[in-house]
Length: 442
Image (cartoon, rainbow, N blue to C red; front, side, top):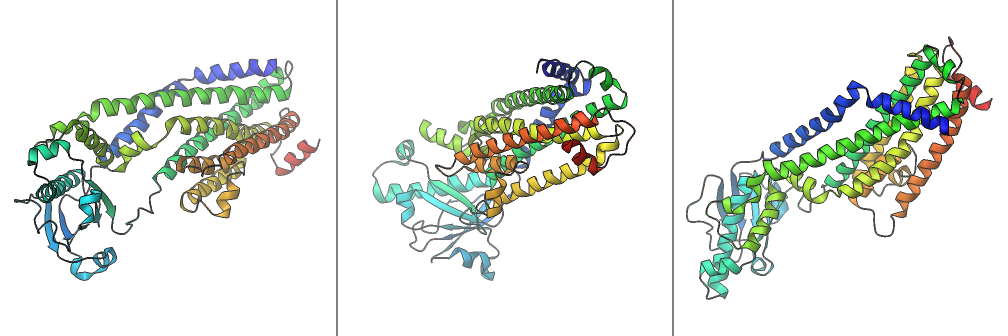
């Protein structure tokens, strides 16, 4: 094992000293942060004008929202109940962009649903929300209090305006958290493939230039294989740590310096509210601005949990796939001879991605139930399920999946050690599948 650590340190410092590796330490997270910034900015797109139909069967609002309508929102009233399906599919309602249901429960629940056909922009949402909220306040003051408007607004609780797609009124199609897990899983596969190829190239290169003959005069083939896997894996972990640090600092910088106007409700002209309400408005602004992506990044992703699971499953996946890449490099007749054997590994990774999508859309399917324990699919499936939340009392599935993958990696490393021992000193041959079985058996 001592020799393995010596080789691991050599491989590690060789990667760290590589100029391309150092460039990627900075260019990788910079590219990722630029992509996030683009998603933040692009999320502000949306419909800039709404024709809103208000179903007010009890004439609660007296067919009035504001005295002078702005250019962003136009209101129309219907004095009857209106089903969402009828509004969505009825020809006479096609001209309207959104439906608001108003009844006597609004005054008690302080909650209103806005069902839209197309996603409104943040500015339109803000205007609609405050215009509707102010009209409901006027009704409350007139009906139940003797307070003035200014005094009431200092003690009021804000109206909860819930925007939903008319084609998905129950928000059943929301799989945002699942895609977060899939993103972390794809990050694992990307690092595994990139650094697995580094193992293959390093092994094949030393074999083709015969340096391996000199090295094996001092160490055992198994020690050489483990040293390469450990050293290159440590370099991968360093890159992941640096990326996480830079991305974390970048996200903090976005929130602190690029979005200050979003977190200052007092800058919204014409809105006078108490400190408590301002804080709630700040949180609602975070959820509403740019689309749900900002809220997802800053409020809903449990970074500590996701990063912890990502590191654990990366280590297990790297050892699992690293055994394959080491075997391919050892059995290659030339430096490029083993490239054809990478295709089956890409196929396994493709199946893993497919199972990850299945975990998002059909999380209760039998395929997903089994795929979370299969070594080459479990990283994506488990991370998707972790992001969405395992049911209470079932977290042991994660531990079981990790144990299965580590045991599978141990078995494959043992097999790879036999192939490495038999193939590393063979030169000038054409790589064939039968060599795998012969060298494992001998």
